[in-house]
Image (tube, rainbow, N blue to C red; front, side, top):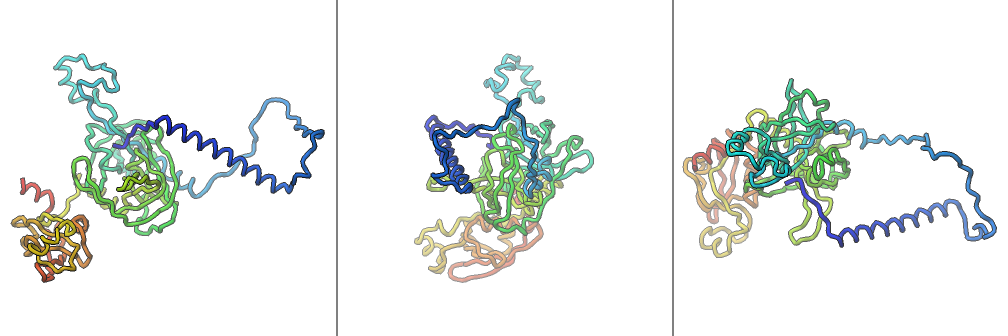
Length: 427
């Protein structure tokens, strides 16, 4: 969930306060020392005890100086271009009848018929989580918003908070759990800004990156953080709450991304959306705390997905019709006795089973074959196979290189069926 309660312990607060005080003292000392050096003074120039500095006469009310500072910069101009297109996305879910929820039991004394009749209303819905989104298109009376799939997951209604605080009802158009993207539509009559997508294929490591969104919810809507593009093509794999795989070929950034920023835009210096913020790493596998490692779905990937979601409400991906296990998870004894592959073959993907009448079977692939390349690119894990497969469309073909025993072979697989059709066949 994107909305998170943050409750530091007492010791944590004391530590933070202490650090703040120390920093203030040190900072003040440095500032004073710098001023002293600039004035070119030394100890001999200090006034004697009999010489008092006379304050300048400044009677009357204290006023604000009429001096203004021009703070326009590339960053402020970029933010101005896109910030009004950024929204908060509130995931509304039904309150349990046994729960007081945010209504303090106001509806708890209803009769059974009252309860049943309210199932079709929004009376018992409350905010389960909050995230961000960005308006990317207006088409007549409809405006479209892109956000993360995990932001809208489980929602029974969606409330969209526009940049000026206006709340409108959102309707889910489609979701794609694999890339963690979703599209929502709203009425366009109150939408006064639409974001533009930039070309994520032309990004450079080190260029400025700006994250805009609602960290910790809409109370902090349109928060802006600045960083750089830290890296490109980071493969982020995970599973969502439903156990579905997530695979993102992500942009890495050190712009601060917090719970609630999910689904909001990562923006370049031209104010163009170059990514959709999705996830951050807060701790390494060995429990080391991590800072400044956020990840965004590249805009070029996002555009391809949202166009399909607008049209069909889903993304159709081809299927091989196999189950797989990584070679790294096979013991040396199993390699020798079952696979009989060369000793130096330590990576790849072992086919555990082949479903009948599928592209894999028709191409001649068999149980215990070890896939090592797809379209000439090395594959080491089942995620690599899935990523290569999901870049294709139904009707495309792929070239699969594999080992059967000690012999390396290559076949062409015609991708004639989609994953959904295959799942329905299995059921």
